[in-house]
Length: 139
Ligand SMILES: CC(C)(COP(=O)(O)OP(=O)(O)OC[C@H]1O[C@@H](n2cnc3c(N)ncnc32)[C@H](O)[C@@H]1OP(=O)(O)O)[C@@H](O)C(=O)NCCC(=O)NCCS
Image (cartoon, rainbow, N blue to C red):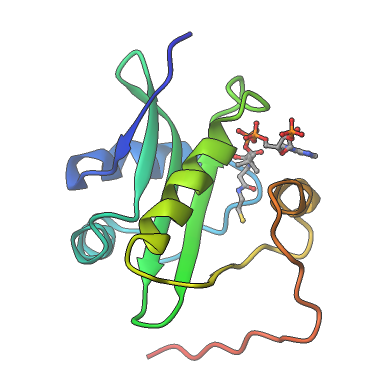
């Protein structure tokens, strides 16, 4: 099973949404629509990646840069392709892309009940922040 990695293009978005829909652990929101995601990909061209097997998208990660920090969204690896290093490779590519523009820290938000993702992030060297709460506001 050969896996290729490349940056995400706008034309990958539909297949990525279909992949995310199959997954527990990912919070799919109203902003996960083609228009908003195309804006995201175009504004963060170097920070979004896909893993591909036989022309099929089997992994994704969205990276966003806000001018200070990097943010990671929608890290996902298709069932059947997990525990083969694909998630780690997607994250490493995203981290490298941030480092190249001198971003010194990035954040990832994880649902409280998503123990798998928490274990994964710990395994790849991310620190759990217990002193921060996230507030959000719909605009
Ligand atoms: C989390 C996820 C992306 C991991 O992808 P993956 O390709 O299976 O991860 P990798 O194979 O690269 O694993 C990297 C390391 O993490 C470990 N790991 C991966 N999944 C794990 C799990 N569920 N529990 C414990 N450790 C795990 C691997 O064993 C590996 O450790 P090693 O380097 O010592 O062997 C995948 O499980 C997934 O898509 N989950 C559903 C979507 C999701 O929750 N996304 C995160 C949203 S915040």
